[in-house]
Length: 329
Picture 1: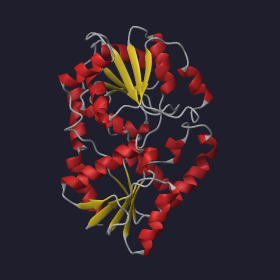
Picture 2: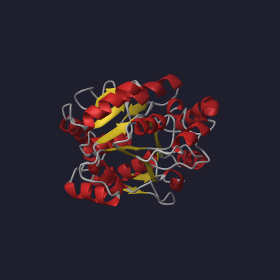
Picture 3: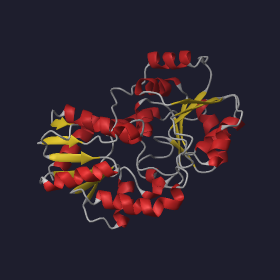
Picture 4: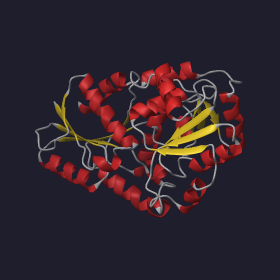
Protein backbone atom coordinates (compact mmCIF):
# COMPACT_ATOMS: atom_id res chain seq x y z
CA UNK A 1 0.00 0.00 0.00
CA UNK A 2 1.31 3.41 -1.01
CA UNK A 3 -0.50 6.62 -0.09
CA UNK A 4 -0.49 9.87 -2.02
CA UNK A 5 -0.94 12.79 0.36
CA UNK A 6 -2.11 15.28 -2.20
CA UNK A 7 -0.72 18.74 -1.45
CA UNK A 8 -1.98 20.79 -4.38
CA UNK A 9 -2.35 24.49 -3.44
CA UNK A 10 -0.56 23.79 -0.15
CA UNK A 11 0.78 27.35 -0.27
CA UNK A 12 -2.78 28.62 0.23
CA UNK A 13 -3.48 26.60 3.37
CA UNK A 14 0.01 25.94 4.72
CA UNK A 15 -0.48 28.34 7.64
CA UNK A 16 -3.92 26.99 8.52
CA UNK A 17 -5.13 24.03 10.54
CA UNK A 18 -5.47 22.04 7.32
CA UNK A 19 -1.79 22.56 6.58
CA UNK A 20 -0.97 21.32 10.05
CA UNK A 21 -3.31 18.33 9.56
CA UNK A 22 -1.43 17.31 6.41
CA UNK A 23 1.84 17.42 8.33
CA UNK A 24 0.27 15.27 11.04
CA UNK A 25 -0.90 12.74 8.45
CA UNK A 26 2.59 12.56 6.99
CA UNK A 27 4.09 11.96 10.42
CA UNK A 28 1.46 9.28 11.14
CA UNK A 29 2.45 7.40 8.00
CA UNK A 30 6.12 7.76 8.84
CA UNK A 31 5.49 6.43 12.34
CA UNK A 32 4.07 3.17 10.96
CA UNK A 33 6.55 3.10 8.08
CA UNK A 34 3.77 3.21 5.48
CA UNK A 35 4.94 4.05 1.96
CA UNK A 36 3.72 7.49 0.96
CA UNK A 37 4.46 10.40 -1.35
CA UNK A 38 3.36 13.96 -2.03
CA UNK A 39 4.27 13.66 -5.72
CA UNK A 40 1.12 12.87 -7.70
CA UNK A 41 3.24 11.69 -10.64
CA UNK A 42 4.44 8.68 -8.65
CA UNK A 43 2.52 5.42 -8.46
CA UNK A 44 0.09 5.12 -5.54
CA UNK A 45 -2.78 2.96 -4.32
CA UNK A 46 -4.69 5.49 -2.22
CA UNK A 47 -5.03 9.24 -2.62
CA UNK A 48 -5.73 11.23 0.55
CA UNK A 49 -7.35 14.62 -0.17
CA UNK A 50 -7.61 17.44 2.36
CA UNK A 51 -8.73 20.50 0.41
CA UNK A 52 -11.75 21.52 -1.62
CA UNK A 53 -9.86 23.43 -4.29
CA UNK A 54 -10.56 22.53 -7.94
CA UNK A 55 -7.18 20.80 -8.32
CA UNK A 56 -8.17 18.32 -5.59
CA UNK A 57 -11.34 17.61 -7.53
CA UNK A 58 -9.29 16.99 -10.68
CA UNK A 59 -7.00 14.71 -8.68
CA UNK A 60 -10.01 12.68 -7.55
CA UNK A 61 -11.16 12.25 -11.16
CA UNK A 62 -7.69 11.13 -12.24
CA UNK A 63 -7.47 8.66 -9.36
CA UNK A 64 -10.93 7.30 -10.14
CA UNK A 65 -9.98 6.65 -13.78
CA UNK A 66 -6.93 4.71 -12.58
CA UNK A 67 -9.00 2.64 -10.17
CA UNK A 68 -7.34 4.08 -7.07
CA UNK A 69 -9.02 4.43 -3.69
CA UNK A 70 -9.96 7.98 -2.67
CA UNK A 71 -10.03 9.12 0.95
CA UNK A 72 -11.47 12.61 1.46
CA UNK A 73 -10.79 14.37 4.75
CA UNK A 74 -13.68 16.76 5.48
CA UNK A 75 -12.15 19.58 7.47
CA UNK A 76 -14.88 22.11 6.66
CA UNK A 77 -18.62 22.46 7.04
CA UNK A 78 -21.02 25.21 6.05
CA UNK A 79 -21.49 25.92 9.74
CA UNK A 80 -17.83 26.74 10.38
CA UNK A 81 -17.60 28.68 7.12
CA UNK A 82 -20.15 31.23 8.31
CA UNK A 83 -18.90 34.42 10.02
CA UNK A 84 -15.43 33.98 8.60
CA UNK A 85 -14.54 36.18 5.63
CA UNK A 86 -16.27 39.02 3.82
CA UNK A 87 -19.40 37.62 2.16
CA UNK A 88 -19.09 34.19 3.79
CA UNK A 89 -22.64 34.20 5.15
CA UNK A 90 -24.06 35.13 1.76
CA UNK A 91 -22.34 32.30 -0.08
CA UNK A 92 -22.53 29.71 2.73
CA UNK A 93 -25.35 27.69 1.03
CA UNK A 94 -23.28 27.53 -2.17
CA UNK A 95 -20.25 26.54 -0.12
CA UNK A 96 -22.27 23.64 1.33
CA UNK A 97 -23.18 22.43 -2.15
CA UNK A 98 -19.57 22.67 -3.31
CA UNK A 99 -18.03 20.80 -0.39
CA UNK A 100 -20.73 18.14 -0.62
CA UNK A 101 -19.88 17.69 -4.31
CA UNK A 102 -16.19 17.38 -3.46
CA UNK A 103 -16.59 15.04 -0.47
CA UNK A 104 -18.78 12.70 -2.51
CA UNK A 105 -15.79 12.03 -4.78
CA UNK A 106 -14.22 10.02 -1.97
CA UNK A 107 -14.78 6.32 -1.42
CA UNK A 108 -14.88 7.22 2.28
CA UNK A 109 -15.04 10.53 4.12
CA UNK A 110 -13.09 11.22 7.31
CA UNK A 111 -13.89 14.17 9.57
CA UNK A 112 -12.17 15.16 12.84
CA UNK A 113 -14.94 14.63 15.40
CA UNK A 114 -18.26 12.97 16.05
CA UNK A 115 -19.70 16.48 16.16
CA UNK A 116 -18.58 17.34 12.63
CA UNK A 117 -19.74 13.88 11.51
CA UNK A 118 -23.20 14.61 12.92
CA UNK A 119 -23.31 17.78 10.80
CA UNK A 120 -22.15 16.02 7.64
CA UNK A 121 -24.70 13.27 8.26
CA UNK A 122 -27.41 15.88 7.58
CA UNK A 123 -25.90 16.80 4.19
CA UNK A 124 -27.19 13.69 2.45
CA UNK A 125 -23.73 12.58 1.33
CA UNK A 126 -23.60 9.28 -0.48
CA UNK A 127 -20.42 7.98 1.13
CA UNK A 128 -19.64 6.43 4.54
CA UNK A 129 -18.38 8.99 7.05
CA UNK A 130 -15.91 8.22 9.85
CA UNK A 131 -14.60 10.45 12.62
CA UNK A 132 -10.88 10.60 13.34
CA UNK A 133 -9.04 13.39 15.12
CA UNK A 134 -6.43 15.47 13.32
CA UNK A 135 -4.11 14.31 16.08
CA UNK A 136 -1.35 16.07 17.98
CA UNK A 137 2.40 15.55 18.34
CA UNK A 138 2.65 15.48 22.13
CA UNK A 139 6.41 14.93 21.97
CA UNK A 140 6.78 18.35 20.34
CA UNK A 141 4.18 20.45 22.16
CA UNK A 142 5.63 19.72 25.56
CA UNK A 143 5.73 22.13 28.46
CA UNK A 144 9.29 23.19 29.26
CA UNK A 145 11.07 26.07 30.95
CA UNK A 146 13.36 26.86 28.02
CA UNK A 147 10.39 27.55 25.77
CA UNK A 148 8.81 29.77 28.39
CA UNK A 149 12.02 31.74 28.81
CA UNK A 150 12.40 32.27 25.05
CA UNK A 151 8.85 33.57 24.74
CA UNK A 152 9.18 35.93 27.69
CA UNK A 153 12.51 37.24 26.43
CA UNK A 154 11.31 37.80 22.87
CA UNK A 155 8.30 39.84 23.95
CA UNK A 156 10.10 41.52 26.85
CA UNK A 157 7.73 40.18 29.47
CA UNK A 158 8.50 40.07 33.17
CA UNK A 159 8.29 36.62 34.70
CA UNK A 160 5.31 37.60 36.85
CA UNK A 161 3.45 39.36 34.03
CA UNK A 162 0.15 37.69 33.16
CA UNK A 163 -0.25 36.70 29.50
CA UNK A 164 -3.34 35.48 27.66
CA UNK A 165 -3.00 34.08 24.12
CA UNK A 166 -5.20 32.86 21.31
CA UNK A 167 -4.45 31.51 17.84
CA UNK A 168 -6.42 31.74 14.63
CA UNK A 169 -7.56 33.78 11.67
CA UNK A 170 -9.03 37.25 12.15
CA UNK A 171 -12.61 35.99 12.08
CA UNK A 172 -15.73 36.85 14.03
CA UNK A 173 -16.35 33.08 14.21
CA UNK A 174 -13.08 32.73 16.11
CA UNK A 175 -14.27 35.22 18.72
CA UNK A 176 -11.61 37.82 18.03
CA UNK A 177 -14.06 40.64 18.82
CA UNK A 178 -14.55 39.31 22.36
CA UNK A 179 -10.79 38.80 22.72
CA UNK A 180 -10.21 42.46 21.86
CA UNK A 181 -12.89 43.65 24.28
CA UNK A 182 -11.45 41.52 27.09
CA UNK A 183 -8.03 43.07 26.50
CA UNK A 184 -9.64 46.51 26.61
CA UNK A 185 -11.37 45.80 29.93
CA UNK A 186 -8.38 44.04 31.54
CA UNK A 187 -5.45 46.44 30.96
CA UNK A 188 -3.22 44.82 33.59
CA UNK A 189 -2.90 41.64 31.49
CA UNK A 190 -1.10 41.21 28.16
CA UNK A 191 -3.16 39.74 25.29
CA UNK A 192 -1.53 38.15 22.22
CA UNK A 193 -3.44 36.91 19.17
CA UNK A 194 -1.23 34.80 16.91
CA UNK A 195 -2.20 34.20 13.30
CA UNK A 196 -2.67 36.13 10.10
CA UNK A 197 -5.43 36.84 7.60
CA UNK A 198 -5.27 39.14 4.61
CA UNK A 199 -7.05 42.32 5.64
CA UNK A 200 -8.77 42.28 2.24
CA UNK A 201 -10.81 39.33 3.54
CA UNK A 202 -11.55 40.69 7.02
CA UNK A 203 -15.01 42.23 7.58
CA UNK A 204 -15.16 45.95 8.42
CA UNK A 205 -16.46 45.24 11.94
CA UNK A 206 -13.37 43.23 12.82
CA UNK A 207 -11.02 45.71 11.14
CA UNK A 208 -12.44 48.54 13.26
CA UNK A 209 -12.05 46.50 16.44
CA UNK A 210 -8.44 45.62 15.62
CA UNK A 211 -7.52 49.25 14.92
CA UNK A 212 -8.41 50.41 18.42
CA UNK A 213 -5.58 51.78 20.51
CA UNK A 214 -5.29 49.12 23.22
CA UNK A 215 -1.73 49.09 24.61
CA UNK A 216 -1.93 45.58 26.09
CA UNK A 217 -3.30 43.98 22.90
CA UNK A 218 -0.82 42.55 20.40
CA UNK A 219 -1.10 40.98 16.94
CA UNK A 220 2.38 39.52 16.18
CA UNK A 221 1.08 37.72 13.08
CA UNK A 222 1.80 34.18 11.96
CA UNK A 223 4.55 32.33 13.83
CA UNK A 224 6.09 28.93 13.14
CA UNK A 225 5.37 25.89 15.28
CA UNK A 226 8.54 26.32 17.37
CA UNK A 227 7.55 29.85 18.34
CA UNK A 228 3.98 28.75 18.90
CA UNK A 229 5.14 26.08 21.31
CA UNK A 230 7.11 28.78 23.14
CA UNK A 231 3.99 30.94 23.30
CA UNK A 232 1.94 28.13 24.86
CA UNK A 233 4.66 27.46 27.41
CA UNK A 234 5.19 31.12 28.20
CA UNK A 235 1.56 32.06 28.73
CA UNK A 236 -0.84 31.87 31.64
CA UNK A 237 -3.99 31.08 29.69
CA UNK A 238 -5.09 29.83 26.29
CA UNK A 239 -8.36 31.58 25.50
CA UNK A 240 -10.35 29.82 22.76
CA UNK A 241 -13.41 31.94 22.02
CA UNK A 242 -14.47 30.20 18.82
CA UNK A 243 -18.19 29.92 18.11
CA UNK A 244 -17.89 26.90 15.78
CA UNK A 245 -15.20 24.29 15.01
CA UNK A 246 -14.79 20.87 13.48
CA UNK A 247 -12.08 20.19 16.10
CA UNK A 248 -9.48 22.91 16.69
CA UNK A 249 -5.87 21.74 16.32
CA UNK A 250 -4.58 24.68 18.36
CA UNK A 251 -6.72 23.48 21.25
CA UNK A 252 -5.03 20.07 21.07
CA UNK A 253 -1.66 21.83 21.07
CA UNK A 254 -2.58 23.85 24.16
CA UNK A 255 -3.76 20.71 25.97
CA UNK A 256 -0.46 18.99 25.15
CA UNK A 257 1.53 22.00 26.40
CA UNK A 258 -0.32 21.93 29.73
CA UNK A 259 -1.50 25.52 29.59
CA UNK A 260 -4.74 26.44 31.42
CA UNK A 261 -7.60 26.68 28.92
CA UNK A 262 -10.84 28.63 28.80
CA UNK A 263 -13.16 27.80 25.89
CA UNK A 264 -16.57 28.91 24.72
CA UNK A 265 -19.21 26.43 25.83
CA UNK A 266 -20.36 25.19 22.41
CA UNK A 267 -21.83 21.82 21.30
CA UNK A 268 -18.61 20.34 19.89
CA UNK A 269 -16.97 20.40 23.32
CA UNK A 270 -19.97 19.14 25.33
CA UNK A 271 -18.99 15.46 25.29
CA UNK A 272 -15.24 15.73 24.86
CA UNK A 273 -14.13 18.46 27.27
CA UNK A 274 -15.67 18.29 30.71
CA UNK A 275 -16.18 21.65 32.36
CA UNK A 276 -14.13 22.02 35.52
CA UNK A 277 -12.28 18.76 34.81
CA UNK A 278 -10.29 19.28 31.61
CA UNK A 279 -10.90 22.96 30.85
CA UNK A 280 -12.98 25.90 32.01
CA UNK A 281 -15.96 27.03 29.92
CA UNK A 282 -18.07 30.14 29.56
CA UNK A 283 -20.92 31.35 27.36
CA UNK A 284 -21.42 35.02 28.17
CA UNK A 285 -18.84 37.81 28.04
CA UNK A 286 -19.03 38.62 31.76
CA UNK A 287 -18.43 34.97 32.59
CA UNK A 288 -15.38 34.89 30.34
CA UNK A 289 -14.00 37.95 32.08
CA UNK A 290 -14.63 36.59 35.58
CA UNK A 291 -13.20 33.15 34.87
CA UNK A 292 -10.21 34.55 33.01
CA UNK A 293 -9.17 36.52 36.09
CA UNK A 294 -9.76 33.56 38.39
CA UNK A 295 -7.61 31.28 36.23
CA UNK A 296 -4.61 33.57 35.70
CA UNK A 297 -4.64 34.57 39.38
CA UNK A 298 -4.70 30.86 40.29
CA UNK A 299 -7.88 31.19 42.32
CA UNK A 300 -9.34 28.00 40.82
CA UNK A 301 -7.93 24.45 40.53
CA UNK A 302 -5.29 23.66 37.90
CA UNK A 303 -6.85 21.33 35.31
CA UNK A 304 -3.86 20.94 33.01
CA UNK A 305 -2.92 17.38 33.98
CA UNK A 306 -6.39 16.08 33.16
CA UNK A 307 -6.38 18.05 29.92
CA UNK A 308 -3.01 16.56 29.02
CA UNK A 309 -4.47 13.06 29.31
CA UNK A 310 -6.94 13.97 26.54
CA UNK A 311 -4.08 15.16 24.35
CA UNK A 312 -2.30 11.83 24.86
CA UNK A 313 -5.40 9.99 23.63
CA UNK A 314 -5.14 11.96 20.38
CA UNK A 315 -1.40 11.62 19.98
CA UNK A 316 -0.27 10.87 16.44
CA UNK A 317 0.94 7.42 17.49
CA UNK A 318 -2.65 6.49 18.35
CA UNK A 319 -4.25 8.29 15.42
CA UNK A 320 -1.88 6.67 12.91
CA UNK A 321 -3.15 3.15 13.62
CA UNK A 322 -6.77 4.22 13.22
CA UNK A 323 -5.94 6.04 9.98
CA UNK A 324 -4.41 2.89 8.49
CA UNK A 325 -7.50 0.92 9.49
CA UNK A 326 -9.64 3.38 7.55
CA UNK A 327 -7.33 3.16 4.53
CA UNK A 328 -7.87 -0.60 4.53
CA UNK A 329 -11.68 -0.52 4.56
